[in-house]
Image 1 (cartoon, helix red, strand yellow):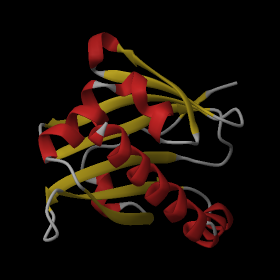
Image 2 (spheres, rainbow, N blue to C red):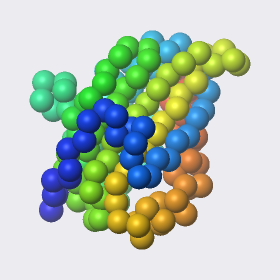
Image 3 (tube, rainbow, N blue to C red):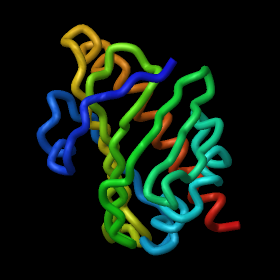
Length: 157
């Protein structure tokens, strides 16, 4: 059963008690990467292996996300700046312990060419859950890097 989280504003991406940030370069333009993130949300399962389904809601101002393993998030898009930033707040989830959560995707020019993608998970949770998430950081980072490689392959096809 999903429960409501504390509704936070955009600054939570910078002020949350726990922030896990990961960066990867993708060999595609920021416009193309942004379109995959924000405009083609139904394709996420084809490149982000932990995602089972993404459905736009609220006339495109929200998303429902189902993860493999049963996790669920109902989200509100907080920032949608083409080729720059895509940020959403999790409003409801069935994930236990989380009090507030936001994910922030920032795009910039990569020195290697293409786009540098920085993904930040901003979370408020009890200390024990925050500690567990910190311990899980290597796995979360590996999942992100794998997703970015798969996204790059998809965009090149």
